Structure formats: C-alpha cells, structure tokens
Image (cartoon, rainbow, N blue to C red; front, side, top):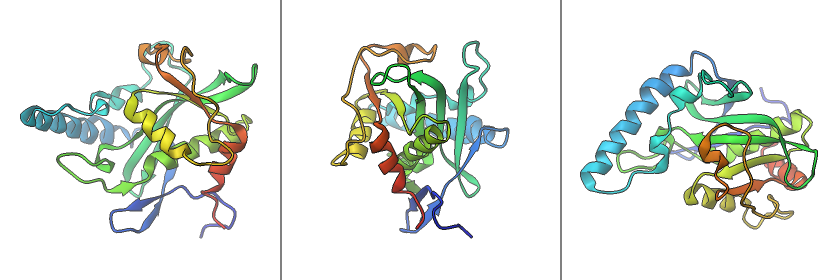
Length: 221
C-alpha cells in the first residue's frame, strides 16, 4: 500500500488507467529490452520510413544498448536509471551529477544527458503508444534525484533537437513560478559526447522553486 505523502510517478495507459513507474539503476535485466526489443523496433521503423519516403525520427538513431554499458573512457560518472512499468521498460534517464549551474555560480545541478520513452511508448507509423506522459514523469523523477542529492531540485539539460525543445517548453508552459530559467545557447555539457558540446543547442535549467512545485504534482495525498 502506498503511504500518503509519497511521490508516485504515474503514466496513463491506452485504456485511461494510471500505472506507477518503478525507477531502478540499470542492471542486466534491462539489457535485453535495449539490445533486442528497442534495437529491432528502431530498425523496423527505419525500414518503414524508407519504404514510404518519410524522414525518420531522430530517436531512431539512438543506441541505448551501447550507452548503458559505460564501456568508454570518460563515462564513469554517468548513471543510467530505468523506469519500469510492470515487467516492461517504459523509458530511461542518463544523468551526470555535479554539473555547475549556469544561473547560480558554484551550485551543482543534476544534468540530463538522455531522457527517452521506449519506442513502444511512442506513436509511430507502425504502432500506437502503450503508455503516455512518460517524458514528463521522467523529468519529474530527475527533480527528485536532484533534491535527494542536495541540489534543491536543480536540473539542467540540452534539448537535442527542435522536437525535444518543443516537448520541454510544453511541460513548462503557463507554470507559475516558471519551471525554467531563460533559455541559453553557447553552454557546453559535462559529457565527452560531441552532440552535447554543440554550442548551438538550447540549454535549459530548472529553477529551484519551479522544479519543486513541478515535483509536487506527483505527490500522493
């Protein structure tokens, strides 16, 4: 039984029911979902888009089955957090601790390198998503990790493309106080990955009060 006052990061099923996510560090039980299911669905979608002549979504080129193993030098500080919905992976986060705030010098933030729902939780030309609102729940959970780490809910990230930027803007739309500080460019991320060190990418950082209010949306009363 869930105690009152706890945070419940729930998502919506296709039938309208709510399902709670269970967040765990990456382990061997998650690898087949990435290296088999995710990879094969990505390949299938690439083939379908090739046949129809439509451009493929950027996420199709992601390779989480490689990212989560942390085999390359320089990635020792990356942590992969898996969001499970029952026996299935709903999505995942790759985070880095200790990235300096761009709005409060000397103050650490939790930096999100990757935030992604699983392919089977996205609408595509081949299938309809199984669960919705996963991305928002992942962002809220990152705020909780930041809060638990003593970072006052500060979370930072780069929007990898226009679609991702639109998602983050929609999450923060009309929130008072504002969820984010002013958008910036020219900020380099903490990862060795070249894409996150592109100064043209839009940098977003959650305000402490906006982040805590956002997290409160998931508190079980």
